[in-house]
Image 1 (cartoon, helix red, strand yellow):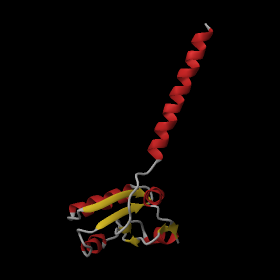
Image 2 (tube, rainbow, N blue to C red; image 1 turned 90 degrees about the vertical axis):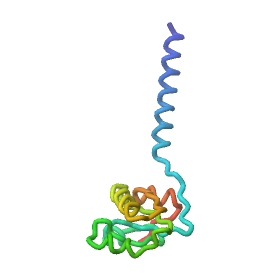
Image 3 (cartoon, helix red, strand yellow; image 1 turned 90 degrees about the horizontal axis):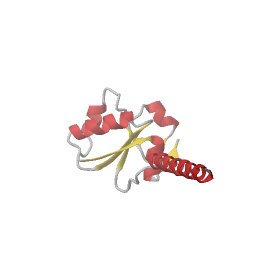
Image 4 (tube, rainbow, N blue to C red; image 1 turned 180 degrees about the vertical axis):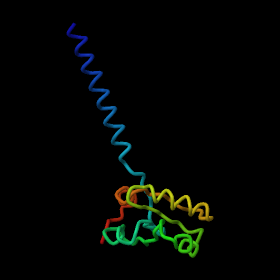
Length: 123
């Protein structure tokens, strides 16, 4: 009877460790090399002013002039796009790819983008 309790405890421990590893793996960011890339912050100007990745250019994806501003960019260059949570960066990346951009990386939210690129958040 005691052996059964030990095995249940071991099984619970293994399941807990597996769950923890799954959660931690989901929190890690895939490294993105920012060398030579243009970093695009697609949030509002006030969000950008409150803190952005070092060297980032602000082009608000929800701004009426987003299409015009990205239209002036080199479609063959490398762009890393981020926002607050990842929703707007996904939209911006999709719009850019539809417009003919060939090398767009969606880095998601600002914290994930900072971790994956190694770029600090500055004001």
